[in-house]
Image 1 (cartoon, rainbow, N blue to C red):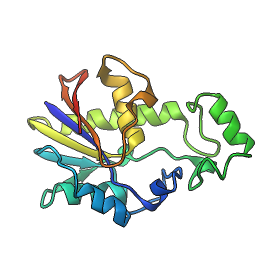
Image 2 (spheres, one colour):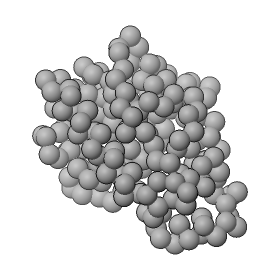
Image 3 (cartoon, helix red, strand yellow):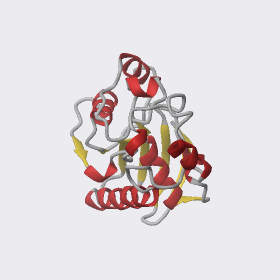
Length: 186
């Protein structure tokens, strides 16, 4: 089975490099325009998180196709960092502590990183199982969601942040039911 992972288009918060997880921001005008410049692989099924930015991206790049949403494919809850950027938090001791831990600790007042990654992988496997018989599935989701799934299932193994991808871009992979082989970047 071919599985495409596409990160949603840009939002206003992305332009300002803010931590946007649980905030349900729509795409911004720049994000919509950029999506129109890229070519995306065809698919049989489109799966998204329930967030406006993912659904809106899917509607632009796969017009006329129905979209199936999975709640647990949503982005991480960034807690006290939500809606803020690194400049605004430069003097925040919680942010400094989180950075010292490699950005993999629980977000203060938010979601634990390990729980988030486990949630995303479980939702990915559920969605694939629900789509049995499809040749190609496109997941239009969040950067963190993509990184979580690839960190756990892609071969050869890489660390979470090594799978970071720009808005509107992603990966084409082959899934054998257990592992994802990255074939190309979108």
